Length: 350
Image: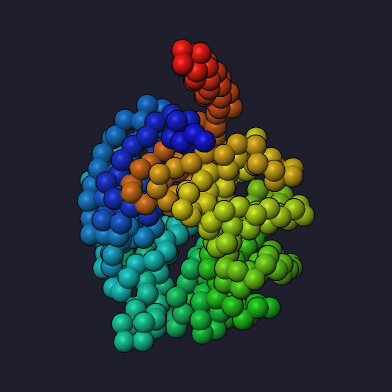
């Protein structure tokens, strides 16, 4: 059993639990629970800048600037030097961030301690100068937000569940799904989007159809789609593929990505693991351990980044990964042979 960081091109430290992780063509950006944001170059792993705001960092998007929701604020940060260009108060607890064209969409939720639940959410629309264009209020907390066909799509929890659509005129509509179960998370695809529910249901929505798939009875915790098939993980370690196979892994599935060669799956339990699976059958080809719980796995082209709950950031070049795996495999096999030889020599001396 080898540590996954042995295969990394570089490993960096964010200082506290990583809550956001983003990659573009040349940079890796991470945000922490305590409010630190760091940008590294992916070619050499060198830190270009660091900035601290009031945490936790909720969401982050890389555009011509870096836009960040943190605590009760929306920030715009200069991408080249890390200078804070402007900050806007968005009240409550900042949640989700989405950029489309010249518009910035942000959600902020109010939590009532007395009832231990969220009671109201505001959807803000800003332009890129930080000017507020519109606000819309609704009751539920959203756990997913993306723009699709000129509308804002929000996957929501109780009491109504399902999803909301908000058009460009601010008209809000509630869409009920087949299951009356809260949405935990969602992802956007080329054809629409997928929503994962707390009862194990998957809602697939495209421009002309809606489909429901039951993936066990337990809460969905991770999703990935390559626009041909999807992979779904739940809280007890079941991994479902739309290609028709299911495998059981140990612990909560916290992340899924699919490269050209493997499906990567991270699980958190007493032993925090990362599995590299065969893409056709789901069988385990390699497995690695990690000392801390994996928080986020994100993939952009051939660049993969993984973060954990202690702030460790690992970056992988998946084009060279198979070579690294084989090199480590040869080294480990050579060490095993040497250790066995030493053991036999000690036995002969006795």
